[in-house]
Length: 149
Image: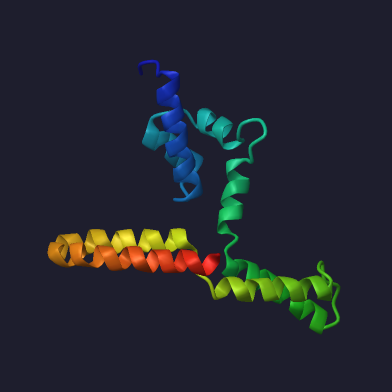
């Protein structure tokens, strides 16, 4: 295998990171897909100095409002049944209120991503309709952004 440049390795590292964090690929799978050693993937996985490891970033990404709500509901169950909770009741109440607010909002990035997927889909089946919908999609996205302000 030819020696890769620093730029090529950086691109591979970014791809590997995405495969691990977003797609859930193992180090071995990533090594095979990108034709690099498992040791290289393992080194990258630890993260650079001052960065979180890929494992920590994957865990953070997986901590969705639904998962967080499940964890907090388990703590609430402990409080109600008289068991020792890791979170005091006041903190638990504040966390639950914050999650309820999160459940009622939509992230503008998510809206934009969904609208882009819809635009791509519509452009394949009805290009004229996709063009017509673009202005409404922009207005809707601006509306969602204004709700966050």
